[in-house]
Image (cartoon, rainbow, N blue to C red; front, side, top):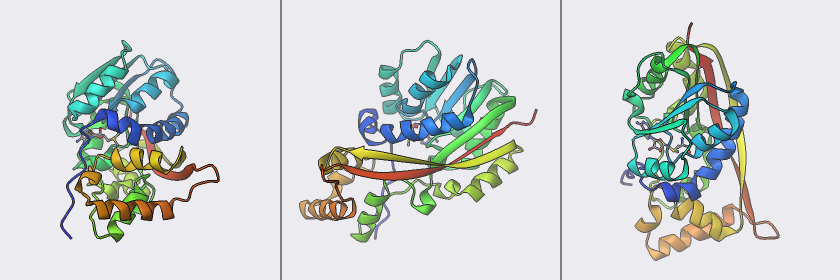
Length: 262
Ligand SMILES: C[S@@+](CC[C@H](N)C(=O)[O-])C[C@H]1O[C@@H](n2cnc3c(N)ncnc32)[C@H](O)[C@@H]1O
């Protein structure tokens, strides 16, 4: 089996159909759990097409948000969606944030840490740019225990002998790995929790278009007609429809939060 191409986020519009609804559901639970007061300065690292940024604006009343992502395409979509004066978008890497030390009240990543080649460097950058006593938080799909909404697709592709790319730093989605990293970085008052979310697709075609065709893996373009038909059949067997044709399944993420030492 040849190794799959790494996952690349090159289409912010496709992302809206693929992952943004999942991101909003998990992000809602995450923000409720962080329970931040209004008027804080935030950095949203790996902001993507702004799915979480929009939620943050609506729910948490930030004074400012620096939203940064290395993908031009994701940030272009975010800029089209969000015109709030508090938000400043930038292109950049989590492992070398272009911000001064001790600048933000909250540094966070939504569904990002497991995509970073060196999660320790990414997390240490969040700590560096956070004010003493500020919050450093993250959540990722629980890849090692089957939590991502892409799990059915990945597993069926694996069974067909077609390699499906996983996030490169999937190990960091384990609670033990997250807690060890936050402790190593000297973060205090650390808490973790699981975020469980559900999404309903109108029918199998809606699922297929959202989670397979719109996937950043570009998998559909790489399949023969026969492979595509087999994958559809497998996924239809695996994700049974309700009497009205809807498909519902859940996904879960591991979240962590703590405070930079004062
Ligand atoms: C699953 S998306 C999450 C986007 C958004 N935070 C959300 O909740 O919808 C993962 C994002 O991580 C970004 N990413 C990948 N590598 C990164 C890195 N080294 N630094 C910052 N962001 C990165 C990708 O470009 C992509 O937009």
